[in-house]
Image 1 (cartoon, rainbow, N blue to C red):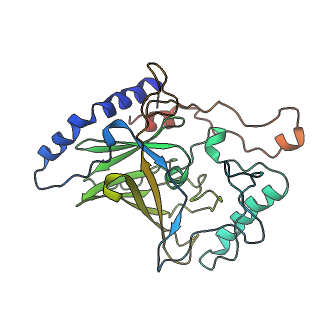
Image 2 (cartoon, helix red, strand yellow):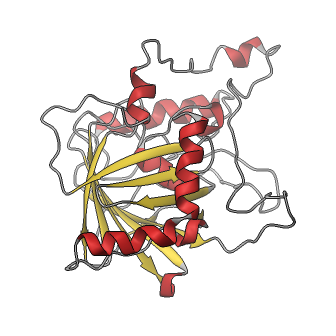
Image 3 (cartoon, one colour):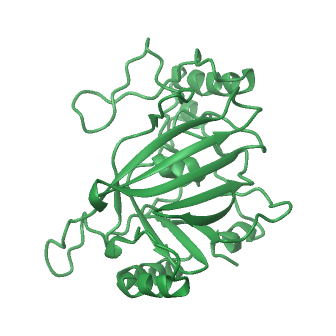
Amino acid sequence: MSKFGFHNLLAALFCSAAILPALAADDSARTIPDFMAGGMGWNSAGGLTAVPGSPSPVVQDPQVKYVPNNVGGQPTWRVADLNNPNLTQFAKDGLKKANDMVAEGFAMYNRTSRCWQPGAAVLNTSPGRTYFLQTPKEVYIIWQRDQIVRHVYLDVPHTANPKPSWNGESVGHYEGDTLVVDTIGQTTSSFVDLYRTPHSEKLHLIERYRLTEGGKALQVEMTFEDPIAFVQPWKATKRWEKVITPSASAGNVTATYAEEIRCMDGEMVNPFNQQYAAKLEPLPTDRDGAEQKLLSGG
């Protein structure tokens, strides 16, 4: 999406108080939950949490200590536990490849740090802030960093054969206080989590978004179904907290809802370290402009 298009969406967010009544008027039988938060957005709060009774998501190898950023001590990289019984051999092979890359010195940053689109599921678990713009026919899910936008088309079926793309094809509907999003057609170049768990073209993701804690928090329950990667479908939740940070001063929007963060085009790498540079994934390109057109809703 162009910067112009993204700024138009942000302008609509700041006017969101006028949008929700229009949604309610569009269908008086519905009770539409307000995820727009007055344009303030939602800050990421924690990672994936297993749902009781569901197979576990991939977790850190217990033999390798993981230290995230900003907790004190030297941060380390994620290394997946390959003993998860819900993983097929296909998934284990993909995760072993990622683990081996870490062991060989690859800096396993979140893919968005390298200007990659992460895919729908990983976008939910990426750090940073998320916004929602709700209209009668479409919900936009907007990730603040690098201005990645998902399009959720309401009350329509999936197309017959959606072309694989980074965010896939998402359709949705409201069930009471919950927005239900059904996504298929995600490119196999994406992963389902920050450990780089792979998936096949059969990946089916269902997300259920709802407000919690009296509207101070937002939660999504994600259901992953892919018979090539997982023995059984599995569920996990992710949480965000409502942004309440005001502007520090006129013209200073650092750390507020209006802050714009851009990814620098290129890998995070010392160009003089050729041994490391040889391990890098080539950045995806959009030679014919088809991906930009899709991301822009065209």
